[in-house]
Length: 190
Image (cartoon, rainbow, N blue to C red; front, side, top):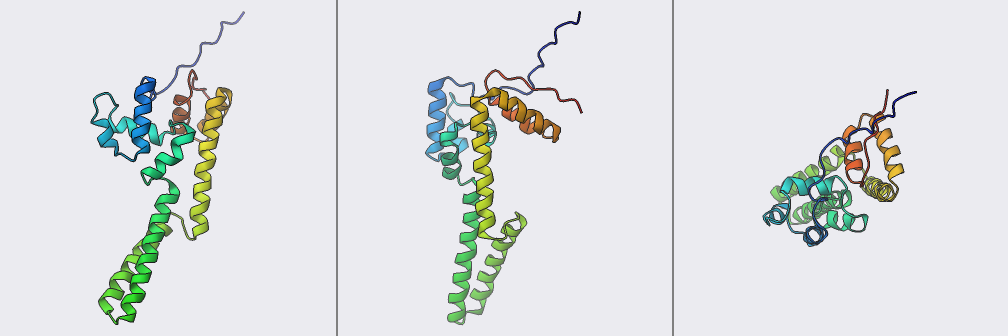
């Protein structure tokens, strides 16, 4: 007769923002949706620290219904960042053309430098076309969708976490399982 297997211990710590009572958590989410800075929110003694709030948002712990809006309000979603850099490049290009028409060589050089910096930032991030920026946003939407389904079906969260662990992404597996109530980490044998 074999001894029953012990349940694996949960790794990591519970998210401080997820542990808030429902009223405080709703207040936190309202503040995030309003676009208030993490530091400003954390100044309220009833709220978690700035780093805890950052981990909460970055870890995908927000309800799927508001996650995209919060990311946009803070300008941190892939589309916003890429779109902002694309906008900088466009404005710099327009400024360079206007400076060229006005025969302002310094203006042309300065605007050209700004455009080049913006294009280098996009290229360094692997964004070569506007389609690339659109596809990055699609991947983010897919990830949020998978998280929402996993939160409704903890057995799927366990499967996704096991796959992430096999890909040496224990950090993502832990974050996923921490966002799901009453889950434990699967120990995956190599």
